Image (cartoon, rainbow, N blue to C red; front, side):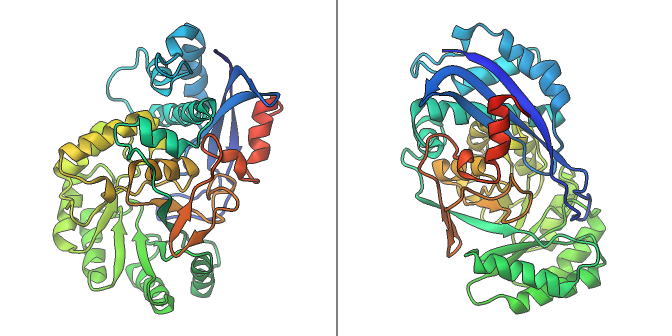
Amino acid sequence: MQITAIRHVTVPIESEMANAFISFASMDVSVLAIITDQVLDGEPVIGYGFNSNGRYAQPGILDHRIVPRLLAAAPDSLIGPESGHLDPELIWRAAMINEKPGGHGDRAVAVGILDMAAWDLAAKLAGRPLHHQLAERAAAGLGTPLERVWVYAAGGYYYPDRGIPALLDELSGYLDLGYRTVKLKIGGATLADDLRRIEAVLAMLPAGADLAVDANGRFDAATAIDYAVALRELPLRWYEEPVDPLDFRALAEVAEAYPGPLATGENLLSRQEAVNLVRYGGLRPDRDVLQMDSALSYGFTEYDRTLAALADHGWSKERCVPHGGHQFNLAIAAACGLGGAESYPGIFEPFGGFADGDQVVDGYVTLPDVPGIGLEAKASLAPILAGLRDGTR
């Protein structure tokens, strides 16, 4: 058993929406395939992976460092002694040869893409859904995965010439799909304008539904605290990324001013940064939410170790709700008993959202009962994966 090829392509997102910091008009994603010499139903067994939105495609690092190392590895060095199959942990180690500690950044994204594909491949070789595979194998696994996972609908972006009525239509559409928590962006307008948007959404929400807000790290400490004071009497699910993701002192100051839940972590790209966040960020393990995203931070191979480190610092897995809105993090949430996962219904297509047929009911979604992550069960994504398989993209 061996890897015969690794292919990747860059795919644009091409959306005119924006958050408080960036426009997605020129955002793109790397999609990668690990192709093997194993054949099932006349087709080679292939693992697929891609990076979450908000970070760009990584063709340079993949071509220059990560993929050549893996292809140069002795085939037997990538085979797990227990499974007899290509092993994600060993693939991860081969990809990280000669990489110094620190310097995470885009390297963490490139390895995360590869790691997603490696886990997809491992589950397919075992003939099992990934959430079952991870639940039994991972240190943080439950043994038996959750049958359904709490998810929230992330939306409410800023669009050119789009006002509050369109915002309400968008978020009420998510409620119609079965979500009970929706999220909108703040920080891209004035505080007064953002409050008008928030209050309009709160007035529209039915009983049992709630709202989270996300500043995407836009504010300095003083502005973040101004927002905290204005928001703290409102019934919000959480106030997300009020300051720069690495400004732990400012985050701690916001936590002192805001008694409600804070959420952050999606822009931390390593286990070490996650540990520093809970050490120095002033966060409270009884209410705050950690959003580290495996696809942007060296993959699940590293995220499993991150969960162990967080537990050592008094944080429950139930306080973790990964960013990303994709099926890989959904499988991880089910396997490890996380507090939930983000969702992007109809946004960041074809990468956001879950498998076709997996409907959200009262805020919870089930997972596909197919080998691997189930990426091929999403019709809008399937043509890109087929192009990688056939070498036509």
